[in-house]
Image 1 (cartoon, helix red, strand yellow):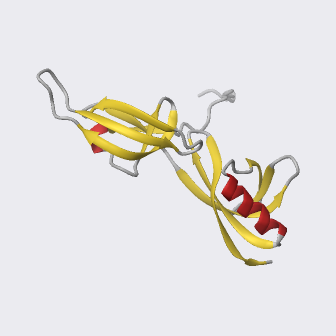
Image 2 (tube, rainbow, N blue to C red):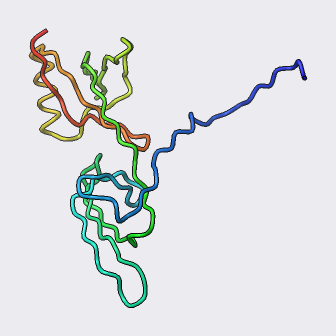
Image 3 (cartoon, one colour):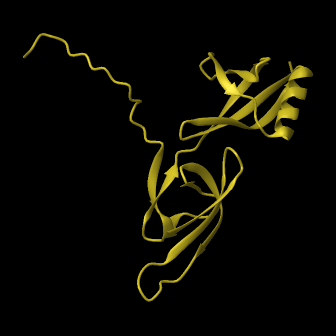
Length: 159
């Protein structure tokens, strides 16, 4: 056996895929789906019957989970669709910086400083008002396909 050590240079992540395949016919309302490269939540599914030649088709109407845009797609029900891995994580809010970023406390006690304030005006107002009043706030961060965004918040009482 060789005594020399091998060093591998790698710019790749851990290999966890951003999506997984799922048959179009098994995707239901309130599920997730990738349409035009965007992670979406399905709001409507309709399936057409098989025609003279071929497949039953699934017509999906979905809303982008990050920007709220409505997207549609039609896929043969026997074909696979990409489904994003969607994670929701709760963090305690520590600070809101002047440049529009938030500072969050992670489970391990570290800080997460790379997340921007939400674009939703109602959520943004609640977050800023609660922070200015000195309340303890817990924000829910949704992440999918390499994107993260604050999607909800809870008030856990005064500091």
